[in-house]
Image (tube, rainbow, N blue to C red; front, top):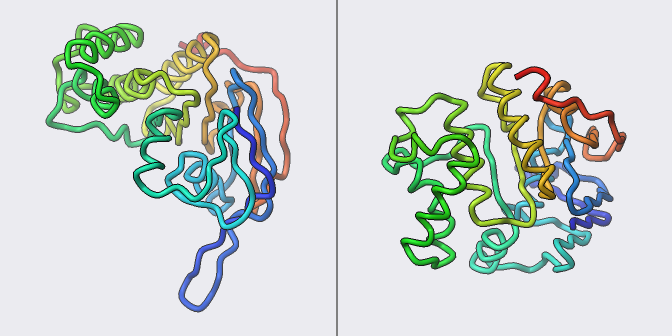
Amino acid sequence: MIEINDLHKSYKMGSNVLHVLKGINFSVKEGELVAIMGSSGSGKSTLLNILGMLDTMDTGTYMLDRVPIKNLNETKAAQYRNKFLGFIFQSFNLINYKTALENVALPLYYQRMPRKERQDKAMKYLERVGLRDWAYHHPNELSGGQKQRVAIARAMAAEPKVLLADEPTGALDSKTSYEVMDLIQKINQEGNTILVVTHEPDIANMCKRIVHLKDGVIEKDELVNQVMAAEYV
């Protein structure tokens, strides 16, 4: 599903050059649930941004579902993101003046889906995350856990090839974090490919594989005995 070869990324910092990713080789098969861990400055956010087509690499190759991701202008990158990827963010990134239903339906609007169809589909995904009764509430009326569930429903509604979750539990308490990870595990069990960036070892161990980044290189890539979040919910 994802194939990265010899990926390098640098940024100019005044007269200096910061080499952030230093030859990353990394692949993810369809249906995997992979955690990407690393301390601040390890390169994990840069890697996620490149995977999400929010940033570009300097050199190397990136294949997503057998499609080469290279030399994309902003329009083409947006089209590919909408086709291939769903995003879950630590800060939820919900639109405050739209209801939960409208937030979930938004990616479908950009796919030019008819209004009735996208509303029906958005409601189906809200129901899947247990928030049907909150469909017409605005984000300021929801708890942190409910906001993240809306964000997950929004990411799933467009039926992406890969879900990219950037610190999805970072703004949540432990109990709510495990509820969110239980939902992510259930989505993965349905065959969805998910990458989770986290700095929390307990969250990483709820994935099936952990990729450890340090100073721009992969220090370790290991399969783990997955901890089921349902045990803590």
